[in-house]
Amino acid sequence: MADLIDGGHTNKPRWRRIVDFPLVAMIFGAALWCIAVGVAGGIVIIARPQIAGFSLEMENYALAILILVPLYICVISRLGDPKRNDFRDPKWLRHLLLGLAGGTAIFSVAVAVAGALGIYRIVGVGSLNGLLAALMVPTVGAAVTEELLFRGILFRWIEQFGGSWMALALTSILFGAAHLRNPNASFIAAGGIAIEAGIMLGAAYMLTRSLWLPMGLHAAWNFTQGEIYDIPVSGTKVEGLVDARLSGNPLLTGNGFGLEASIIAIGVATLFGFWLLRLAVQKGEVKGPSWAKAAN
Image (cartoon, rainbow, N blue to C red; front, side, top):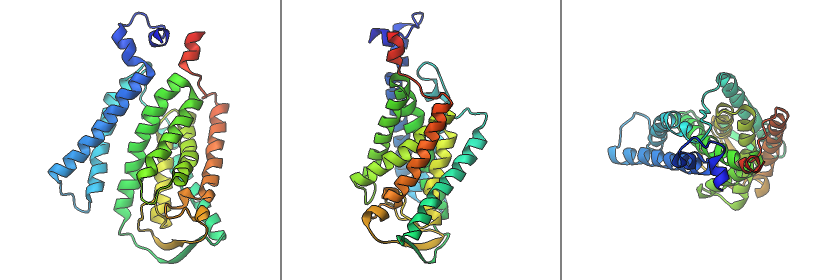
């Protein structure tokens, strides 16, 4: 373990080598993320800011982003060795737009399959009443805060310590488990999230080595299923542009959690995730564990 902590940087003081050790840096980064989210929630509850059209949840996400992004850029990205800011990407706009287009297309394919099977039906016209909430909470809010934690912090340092495959497996499991507290959640739903979204978003991060592609995919995936197709977003009911219903076998409908927990979306998104993973492998973005390098 001493060799792992030293990592060949014998000119550094020992305390610095310990702080820069991948798993230690990850713990510090995750703790700072939790503190930032907690502070945002505390301010919203105590100060009760009055922002026209914003619910408490929307205010919470907005403030969390305003705290988290500069905290990540100024502090979290400077932890560990090497230092890396995953927002710094010369192709950030291209990756973001590709993510938005990809997320929209993937879920649209899943809905089309569900419609062809008679699982998904449009029964009327929806409304735009929930548009602001949909943009703030499951779209921008979830995409930024969750990708910062699961890809920008956990994946980054688990990968540095244990390699890409360990990082992909563990962050996928953790990402799925985090959804167990959602409405109508089940172990099947959490497993579906882990497989479809965990692989897809982790592979997108590996391929680009930035947060913009996974954030775009995450945001568009949530917005498309909820605001466009009127399907629950990870168990949470939202108002869509259409009024739609899911009915049929729970394995196909997601059993109240939404299509994310259905074998339809799991199949479509996982295939896309494996395609991204293949591109990452071809690009040479699969990294080995640091302990293997130290042993050599």
